[in-house]
Image (cartoon, rainbow, N blue to C red):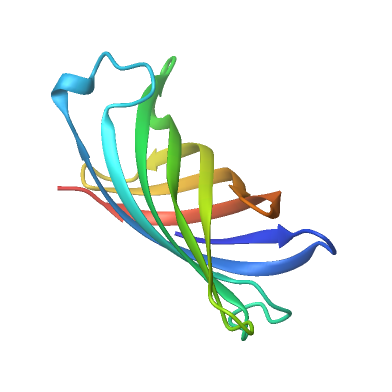
Length: 143
């Protein structure tokens, strides 16, 4: 997924790139939080440049995703996604690791049986950093 966030303070736009993989487990179908276990990697440009700067972060996270249908709509479904992981800050004078919590709400537009477009808003919290949101859009291929 490609996205942008507005880092606080200053509301400076910054780029986010995310790739993930997940698998739906039948035994989790009745779980209220989710039925799909995910692993994701995110790169974020954290400095003054949009695409890439000397200060960046790399986040590896595990998550649980819950997909749900919308009444009377077959082509669009919704989802929630809760993630926890580790964020590593690079490019500064020292290397720093921080706990990451991400909570997402999104919509999936099903283009074909195997491909879809995802639209997502994420509330991000990293220990020692003020919370911020990320808006993203991405393409997926499912088997």
